[in-house]
Amino acid sequence: FMPRARGVALVWPHALAWLFVAFHAHSMLWIQFDYAYHMLVATLAVVLGAGLWITWAWRYRARRPHAWRVAFFNLALLPCFLIERLDFPPLWGVLDGHAVWHFATAPLFAFFWTFVRLDEEFDLKGDSKTV
Image 1: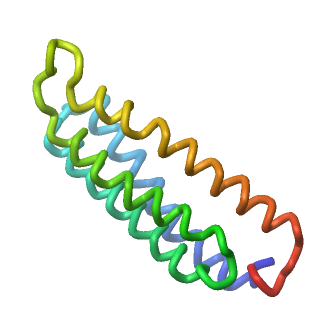
Image 2: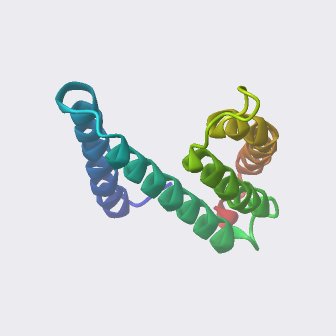
């Protein structure tokens, strides 16, 4: 349950974020694809998203014993993103930055889904004092 005033206030950041995503997609698809600009936006999105998740985990660390999992996931994801961002030529004609990104992140996403499962189980318990 969220008080109405807080719920309405949360609409604006989401609306602005989606408006920016729409603008970015439009400019990349129909105006000019600027790879450097796109990588800047992707980097900011990864850093902002990781920062928000780590902040959430810190805030709920005492009430949700599994919160550390999402912080660990995001902290482990950042070096993988840097490898992706380096965009180096393929090693042995096969392993470029993007391939290494997929290889490194596959187990991380399995770990992330354990967090999702535990968080859902926690929410389904219905202890409203901990939410």
